[in-house]
Image (cartoon, rainbow, N blue to C red; front, side, top):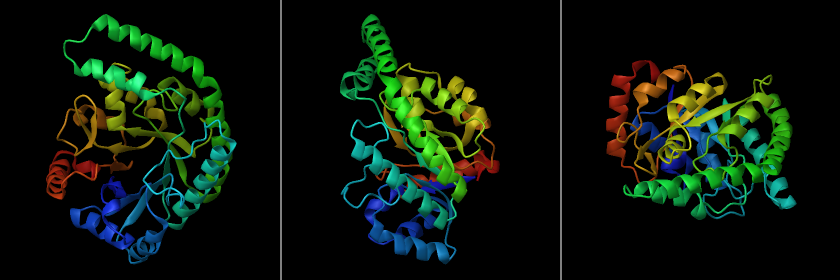
Length: 308
């Protein structure tokens, strides 16, 4: 099932219904209500929903955006934070998002689980810079990568525990509302969870049908490009836990949220891991042009007729 995220045009409109109308005009009827949505847009969104203009396939935490945060910042509060207030606020906002998901009869809620205190400019960003330089020192790259992985594993335990504790509480409400918790793959290794942590998390909740894995094609490709994983192998290992995916393309090595079928991702090879009825939600940068999206959508429907 193909769908589309409001992250593409949310910032261009003051009225929620206009956000929906523009996406519907592109050719999408299934829509994910994404983070960064000001609470003032909710009446328009609900009006559009009641009029039957769209089906809300899912929401992205936090929805709506925290009133005290003036920018689109889905990681403004983290379950992994050392600040007790931030952890409590993250939980409070998540439970509110679940309520909103239920109002829109959404099937899933995409979640970020936090991070560890490692500055990306010293680690993920540095690895990316080295890969971008085609003449980079391979030994230097491997030393940095090995040091990064070891340090991240050493730091991660306490933050992983905090993430699990938060999920244990959130899943109770999710069960009540009938909204699946879709734990998203992240683009930076500093984020929670890493691949090892994601596998552990999914195994921890393996008997709970309300928790699953949300594959972000672009995020995983960025890690693939700096040799932290193999995209296809990782997706194959996560197939039993799949709920759906954020679909966007990548311009090598680190420009993601590009229009699908315009970059380097081999969708022909990767899409068969997904059941056609799973949500394939296009999550695109606001800089992408409507004409390019329409063209890619037509190509997608011709190429993957069972995934529209």
